[in-house]
Image (tube, rainbow, N blue to C red; front, side, top):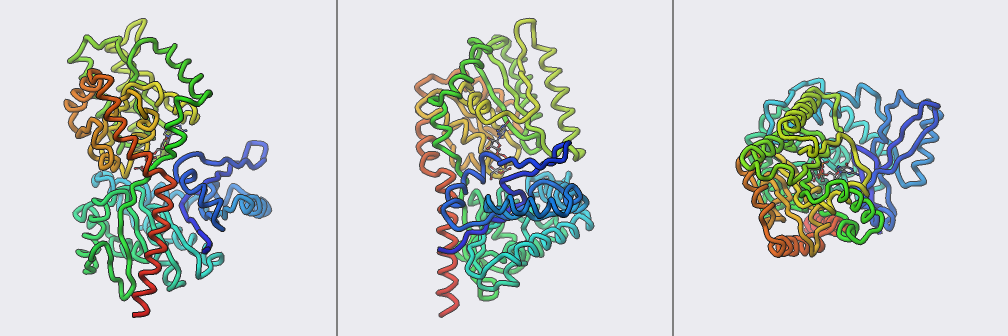
Length: 475
Ligand code: GDG
């Protein structure tokens, strides 16, 4: 069995230096780490990425110590300096690629220094992995921080098998072409044997850009790059279905849920859970709550919106301003409609422990998931999974990749505030039978395509892509 080498911007383990100087290791829960968990343990494997601390933060001997400790966890750190991280991650990744790929062209900063640092950091990753890779490894690279890496590896190892998965949308050609460095980025992707996206639309947009910018046609999801076959396909990411679907039977979650229910009494509970990000549509969602209460005063005191905003990228101006705007709108709405015995919005600006978040999913009557653009959106899937054979309504944006698989939810255009208002009303009025029926169908789908299945299918297809290449080369 070949060795599996996963490369992502962040390692699944973060390092922090405590004020006393001790080094603390924290394992990240959920998401990719969970999905790849079983492979990662069963395969001979290695995970390469940044451990979350800048090089200046560690003494040389500590760097060695960190490397040794991470080795035991099958992880290998990539170290970067403060300036590199700032211009690559906060700069090119989050001020250029993130807004452009999420259809916010006016937020995009085109900065040559950012781009140079992005290239430099992709090369730092390459230099780190080049010493470690063996020609028969299976390499799986993740996300928009490392789009140049597949081709850098390909140039050194012409035969190695490389898979790439993009976790955010790939935009339409008309957006992608705005990028001054578009061709180099496409060539970076095309160093892979297999490129995966969450949806067929993203895969189609990618192939369209490759055709129009590089003149390379694709046939049945295969692109011929100078005699090398690159496969492109959709792999919609799933969730840890077992965990979320068992939530209503888990003692710790039941205890937590009971406490919350006591707090909220008979009121309906609507939840909104996102990282702080302008792509998530939080402002439009709050406007919809305001309009809903204005149009439907009979619902005053009948529900509470639990608004969870997880701090993210706060050093960036747009994110700082968004946070300010959310604070102001929550204050405005609570001041306008609240009373001594009722506050419409319960606002939490922090990351909740997983058990508390799952308890919230568990008790929520409605989940408002209305991003303006989202590669997939796992919150929508996690919420639904806690509702297997149970009541609960998902209001979902048609701009989230998840909408492709969750068509039975109440689907809305997230820019249409009136439509969100109508959706909330509809959610409150749906009968229990209707809710259970909708959730049954969607849960059936979620239970079949879990995160483990997603990872397995990607890797099976990567092995197939390797075989296709071998057949093609020996013809
Ligand atoms: C990117 C893409 C794509 C949220 N709040 C808390 C918390 N979470 C967890 C959720 C979920 C994850 O964070 C968020 O995932 P999303 O998919 O919703 O969004 P992004 O962070 O933007 O992720 C996205 C994803 O990558 C995967 O490819 O779906 O489109 O943008 O798992 O549960 N977890 C805890 N406390 C919180 O308060 N513990």
